[in-house]
Image 1: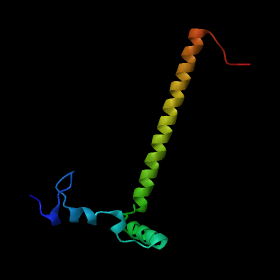
Image 2 (image 1 turned 60 degrees about the vertical axis):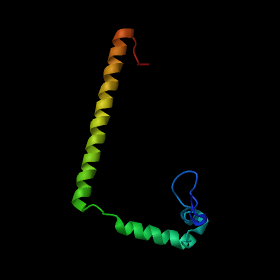
Image 3 (image 1 turned 90 degrees about the horizontal axis):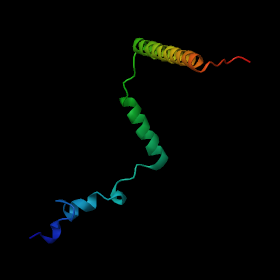
Image 4 (image 1 turned 30 degrees about the vertical axis):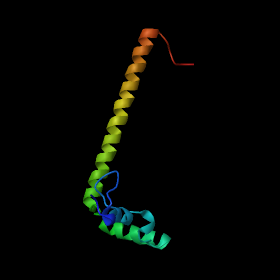
Length: 94
């Protein structure tokens, strides 16, 4: 049988004393807006920034992929339009 100081909760093996320490109102406050920006500064210090060479390389890759897909979609659109013109016998001029 469980001791009064170590009551087992319904959901698991957590004791009553452990359960009380996890309540949000008992957590320490971090100081509002100043604490927020302090936390942001600490997290930004952990960021590993790319080198200039990595940044240029990745930018070229992104532009290359964008150009590739834009040409691919332009070609598909032009092809579908040509097929529809032949099948339906329509023109798109005024």
